[in-house]
Length: 397
Image (cartoon, rainbow, N blue to C red; front, side, top):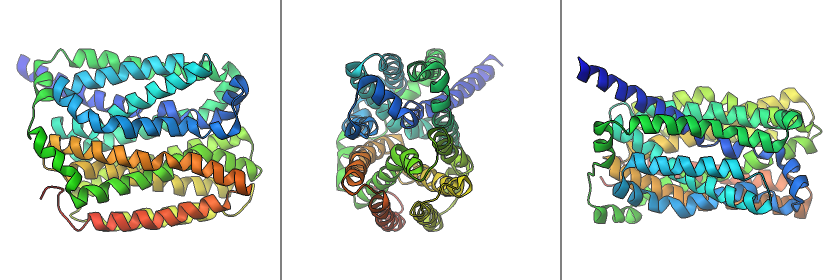
């Protein structure tokens, strides 16, 4: 009876941990775009630097991701996740005091989230190999709802308590996650599983020579390019259209919140389909209609809300599909870790170009139309890579 109770406790803690890790994945980042002007005013930042607030974490994702698999194999997945959560907590707490601490804190947050990004699908594959779709839904759903809340309420909260206090309150999430981690680590079974290896490290290096791995990588990279570009500049686009800053903040939150259904549905649906062609075409249509809507300059909140819902569906569907494919297209957790690390390294390097490039393009043309046309073109390229993914069953098979 005691063994059964302990097993249930371990499973409950693991599920709670997966949900809490999801809550940490975007929240420290999505709270920033609606209050960029506040941060810029406090530290006298140049306009061109504002896009870097999103680009810096993306570069961290690109640089750190390839090494996460080695770290988790050496120290264990739970220990590695614990280090990442501590880094996220410290970075979130101290980034608000000055321009130097803002840079260092952002670097620390980006590096910590990079580790969590790579290990989230690995944690699912290790502890729930027969429930990949359901458990992927658990952390993507959590990620979506918490990022929606942070994006939607950061500007109104900043108006009341200041942007510094608003960002510091976010440390509540990593603190709770740490408490669950320390409780979870008491389980010998959990730690045994977290250090179990399936594949020799030398064999995993060959993933860089697998065509399917590159298709997944570029699909991941382009969806991240699209998401982080629109995350950074959507409020600014709406302000140009005549919508207030607070309303733009709520609209960004709506984009995140509206994607909640797909955060649950896409991983479950993808895991039950032999081919993902239907989902890839669906994502294509959502992106095309959403971005096309931004070409129409109107202050109509109803029209803006429709655009946000379409883009919310599109961006989160593409992200969730990428995450679940890391597990579906690999044969064991070690392969998943290698695939996730590769895709997120190159993918986020591609994505890091988006916010800065879009800001430069806007500065040169004084219009967002060229940026939106670029994003529409990238949607087409992303879809081509997505369709190529469906041609092979697994990365190594």
